[in-house]
Every structure is written in C-alpha cells, then in structure tokens.
Image 1 (tube, rainbow over the protein chains, first blue to last red):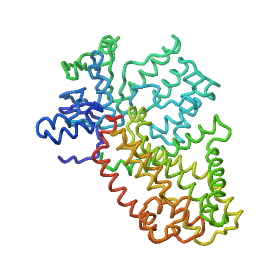
Image 2: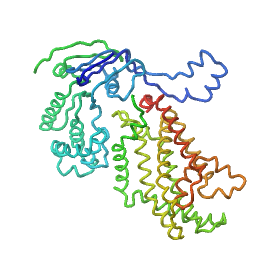
Image 3: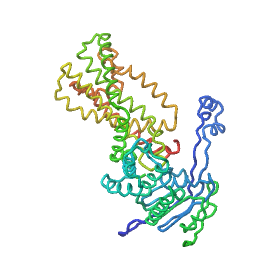
Image 4: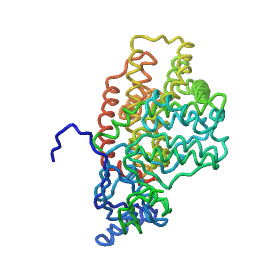
Amino acid sequence: MLHIGFKIMKTIISAHNLVIEFPIFENSHRSLKKAVINISTGGRIGNLVNRHPFVTALEDINFTLEEGSRVGILGHNGSGKTTLLRVLSGIYAPVKGKLVVRGKVASLLDLSMGLDPDATGFENIYLRGILDGLRPSRIRSKIDEIADFTDLGEYLNLPVRTYSSGMMLRLAFAISTSVEADILIMDEWLSVGDQAFSAKASQRLEELVGRSSILVIASHDQHLISRICNRKIQLEHGRITSDEYVRFDHA
Amino acid sequence: MPRSDILNGILSFRVWGTLGWHDIKQRYRRSVLGPLWFTLSTAIMACVLGALYSTILNQPVSQYLPFLAAGLVVWQFISASVLEGCTVFIVSGALIKQINLPLTIHVCRVVWRNFIILLHSIPIVVLSLLIFGVLPNHGFFLLPIGLFLLLINAVWVSVALGILCSRYRDVLPIVSNLLQIAFFLTPVMWSPEILKDRSWIAEFNPLYHLIQIVRAPILSEIIPLKSWFWAIGMVVFGFIFSQYLMNRFRNRVAYWL
C-alpha cells in the first residue's frame, strides 16, 4: 500500500485475531527427572512434558477503533478486561494475531505506578514526567499546575510515605491525569477524595477524556459506560461476546 | 519494534540517568554515609588484605596495595553489575507491567547507578597511589576508554542475564556461586606473574582483561594488547548475543515476571 500526501497519520487501534496466553511455570515441568524420563520415552509424551501449561487470557479478539471512539469494555472479574488494556498499552505483546496501535498512548491502569514512597511529592511528579518521556523544562512548567491541583501545599516537600492514603491518591491522580495523549486507556473511572475534591477530579478527568481522540475504559458500571461511551464491548472468558455501537445518553 | 530495544534504551539517557541518580540520592537520604559505606568497606578490605597478602605473596606493600585497591574497586563494580543484572527485570517488574519502555532502560539505570558507586571508591585508589608515590603518566589518559568499555560490557551482560534470569529463576544462584569462585580465580588479589607457566588461567579469563583495561591505566601501566582485544571482542560478540536474545524474547519478558 502506498500513502501519498501530507496528512498526519490518523490515530487508530486495530486488533486482528489477537490471542494472549500466560505461561505457568512450575518446577515440576522443569525438573531434571522429567527431562531424563523424556529421553527414555520420547515422542508424544515428551511433547507434553516440554510444553508449559498456559492460561488463555484473550482469544480471537478483533476490532478496529478510529478517531472519536469512546469504547467501554464490560465483563466480569477475570474476563480479560485488564489484560486487554495492558495489551493496548504495549505491555503484553500479542502471542498470536496482530495489533496495530498508532498514536501516543497514556494508560491510567494503576495510579500509584512508580510512586516512590521515600521520595517527596515534588520528586515523584518529576520522576513520573521523566518516565513519560517529557523534557525537564516541560516537567517544570507542569509541576506548579499539578501541585496546585492536589491542594497538598507544603506536604509536597515531604516523603510520600508520610501521606495519608487519601493524600497519596490525590497526588497520584493529579500526576496520572496530567498526561497528553491521543489514546487514553483507563481501568475504571477514577474517583478520589472527599466530595469537594471528587467534583474537581471528575471535571479534570472529563477534560482529559475530551482531549483524547480514542478512549478505552474498562468498567463494571453500565451507567457510566452508557454515559461516556459510544461503543460497548462485552468480554467473557477472554472472548468478545458482543460489540455494539450505542448512542450517547447526553446526561 | 522497528529499532533495537538495546539501542533505544541506551539512547533514553534522560530516563535512566534520572532514575539511577534518584536511586543514589535515596541511598544518601536515610543513612549518613550512603554509598560512602562502600568506600569505607573497600578501604578497610584493601588495608587488611593488603597488609596480609603482601606478606603471604611476598610482595612489597608499596606496589601491592595500589594494585589491590584498584582491582577491588573494579571487581566490586563487576560483581554488582552481574548480580543486579540477574534481577534487573524482576525488580523492575512493577514498572515493566505498567509502562511500555525499552527494557534496556532498566539495565542502564542499574549500570549507571553502580558506576556512580564506583566513582565513590576512587578516593581510596587515589589515596593509595599518593601514599606510595605512584605518579600518573601518559597511560593514565586511557582510563576513560577503559571505563567506557567496562560499562558497556556491563550493559550487555545485564541484558543477557536479566532475560535468562526472568525465565529461569535458577540462574541467579548459579551465577552468584560462579562469581564467588571467579573472585579467587581472577587476578584481583594476586598478579598473573605469580602463576608462571600456568598464566593461561589469567589469560583466558575475560574478567581479568576487563579489570586490566581499568586497573592498568590507574597504575600507569600499559594496557596489554590482549586485554584490548578481549574487551572489545566481548563488546562485539556480547551485543550480538544480547540483541539475539532481545529479538527472540523481548516480548516474552513481561509474561515471565
């Protein structure tokens, strides 16, 4: 295929027959004894001995998400939602099948990612910026905004270990939502803090969602999904059982 | 992945530089001496072993102590790089499972951190040189090149060991055992001349050559041509090997953690 022109590449995610399997390593499968038995028996059983058992987390996943997609992933615990989000974030590579992700991805999977309890709040903001690939000058320009948002004031000069869990969440939330990305990947809608902060946080999150051109969010909350998403994908036992477009219920 | 993970990782110097530097800062934070504890323990070890072994090996302490101090400092870097290389991906597991970065960034972070610790021990070496009046000559200027070769060798070794140890958790105890034996087998506490007709024990020991390319310039000796060949050859073949492991297993590492 030949693309000629000056158009900026479109943000897109497309999965084709995607399969994710997790190997399970057990000592019994690696023991010398089995290897020796393997030599003496050979053939069919040998194959079984050598092959590790695995859990199929995702199977035969197909979809294409284009700009403007707001996708809600629904499913029970263990249906593969989080695994799918991690695959889209580039953490697990497809075992079989193909995945194309074009655009800068930001994932809000685990808020406390990389938070160092022994480092101060400010240092944590800086470290996270570095991990996100930002230049120090860019981070410095963002630090004030993030610090303001947390309302933590002087506490930001103290080690995070001294924070209450609510304070820690505020910091983690402010850092995580300061990203800029084309594709936003979220595990559950984030809600943090007391009422006043929660309202502020919700607004910030919606702004972030508004700026991204593709959103993929996993949630158990049907109402949330129908409120913010225009497409619903239902997962069960690692397979897509339904994939439908929905209209916004403008609330 | 269009480009090599190893190359991408090394080029992300801002990320590993910051993380490694942060590690060092953290070590200072809650202890008075921080990484200077390494310096202190190296100093004590050099003094005690220096006094003892110069007698056992019948060598003048004025020559033996600087030799031992320089060797120990380099050995500690090698040993830390190998052992921490084994666990590099396991320790960074939480990060690897949260954010998609070149794996080699985690390796460079560890190597860089250990290099900063190595620099902490330099005063011991300088002190022992000053006390015994070993003056630097032009050979000293090869030290940066020697250090550079040592560092990039540490990078590929850690990449390879990191991948292998994430998959086979039995590799770490094997490696740490071998490392202990290697310490006695490698001319750190003794010089290879002592071996006389059995000097091949040193000559075919890659660790000896890695130490030599750093130790020789410090002691203002000429780096043997053989050691150059070994050190550069290891870089070439080591990176080919690690790249091969990366090509095959880079995408599997996250599954193994």
